[in-house]
Length: 224
Image 1 (cartoon, helix red, strand yellow):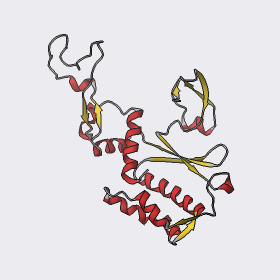
Image 2 (image 1 turned 90 degrees about the horizontal axis):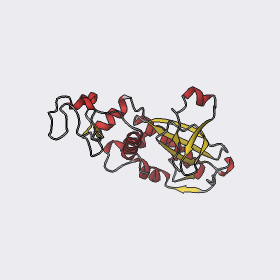
Image 3 (image 1 turned 90 degrees about the vertical axis):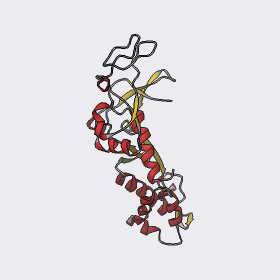
Image 4 (image 1 turned 60 degrees about the horizontal axis):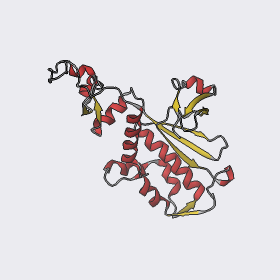
């Protein structure tokens, strides 16, 4: 079920104080207490060892761990991603085989390191029962990095009303200096590939844009 906010998401200060906030689930028709991942665009759920209450058998063996990591962190179409394997943490996997507990720990740390280096906002915290680690991924919708990614990926964004100020009337009921409207009178804004040199002409990034750009960035550096 999708959780929607009744009000603005809680601030970081409120989350630190563990203030309980509620969100509305349309499918259930009721409020529920929300956790502290409200600012995340995406959440990775990473299992822990059985010794810590998770599902990973720490004594099972992973063969050729570096090859497995290369399959995850090196993207054939992104030449720069080969440098991911230079991360010092992979030195713990230099043997032909390692315990699964060690392998999982290195992969978790590598994921956090590589996505953070890509400019994404990364946070981690334990689940309530301690058997999993949540790794959250986000971008500041008003920040510089999301604009960089939007331009890099030629991401289409809607124009602001101000972008139409010199537009002549197009006939019918259309007025000059404004976007055209649909049958219900709602403005229909054109989309253009994002250009940082024209950023003042674009509408702000929505939550869905943050999610999509996070996914594009992750796909550039990590094989999900």
